[in-house]
Image (cartoon, rainbow, N blue to C red; front, side, top):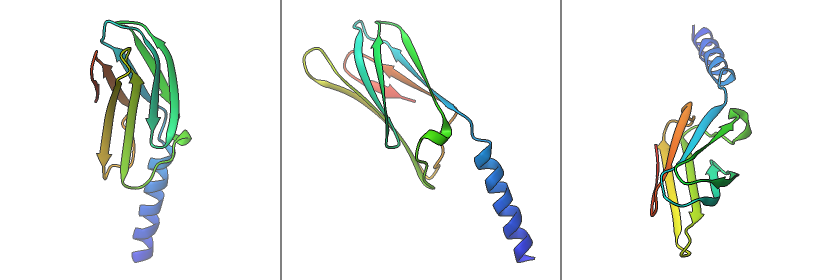
Length: 116
């Protein structure tokens, strides 16, 4: 009986893992300035987004299998330099989930960034 339970559990986990698709990160520039370059870290993989105009958006599609997923947490960080040399950054962290949602929105304002 224990073996059957273990096999069912293993098979279910495999099906869930194989059904993971790409997920989307939408970057909305809600500031009055153009963003020349935004660096995005998803887990430990880095993505660079060039030129996002004022009040414009950019969409990044990330294949699930392109990032290193572990069993307990998921992290997104974004950062770029403002004109005056200050750093504008955002941070999203989910503990105990281990997998990304299908979509995240990064809202970039003049002095701060919100990731939801």
